[in-house]
Image (cartoon, rainbow, N blue to C red):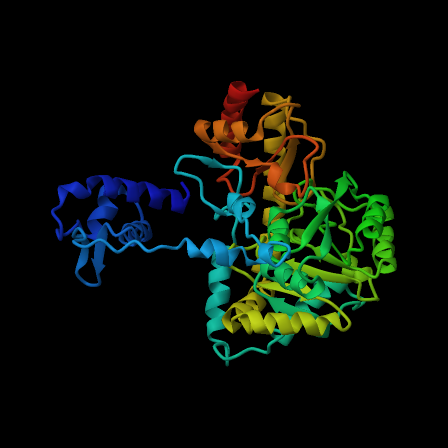
Length: 480
């Protein structure tokens, strides 16, 4: 069972048993709880911390955990209605509202209730994460001379060189001087959009696209303009039309295993996309987010667009997070020309720098023999999971169209039968015990049809995938 599920279940049991103890009464010791519920000490500690955060128990180091005493006073209720006026100042000034809608992102970040199979997750299941290698890397990094000092603002030189080699290849088309180390892909994308587009400006986005990108644009006061993609990536002729119609100076794309379609930008389109952006005087933000989650049957991968761009058109983003752990937020932000200084300045103002121990740990990890072993292991495992989910869907849910089976990434993108209510299906699936991601948040305009995205990376294994599809069949029988 997943650790967080165990924590939630134990917290619920303890919550239901609190009435056995008088206010201020002591709960059983951690050792007793471990033996009674047959869980790990870490699970007990986290469950008690959860109850403490809810104000139900009080923990005292060296003494144990106690049922909290009821509060005798009620905090005064203030009047926050004034904030509606203050927060609507953008609209009053005739500016694009900078509303922040995180709902599309929270779907893949929030843990589902205990017992619900997670087809929504955007990160590797703990069993796929290189936990031992990460722990060893952190341990070695902590002992490095100066590991707890202030790093260079741009990032450690050795780490920037490693990213440059991975992006530019043996020929060295990308140099360490063109790389900034950022705190994860979401942060790097936010920096890029702030640097490249003023509030109110249009930005071109793939349609469908990653909801987190749409949320970044909306929060920055930008107008997202959709450009449709097909099985070969963005359509160049429509991209050119969108640049001419809007005057946009930024196009955001995922040329490799696009989220959510899984499409790879076709070889004949790569040069066209670069040429169109260059002629429009525009930047391409290349989000290369899952290059390290390639499946073992994928064959040779195309180079990043940044490796083929000598003119500074491409601002490239790639991260270690997807292939390691959601908490290992180390990312490269690559650019050349005057824009690099603007990116650097925004990052310094926002975050100063990525903590040096994390950068040192990244160097230790990618330089260890465990790193290529881990990448080979997840390449094999993700292909097995993809094939298991694909076979189960085709057998039990043939009415859900699967137009493309990707050879990289961690999810499938399915089209629903015409007239299907996405929200109703999502709710029915949750009642049946499986969490799925509706397709609507992936579109910046009206979607052409209903869709769902199913992740196969965040579940425990093939058994959960098969059971999750069975539960989804139950939900479809209720809604379709």
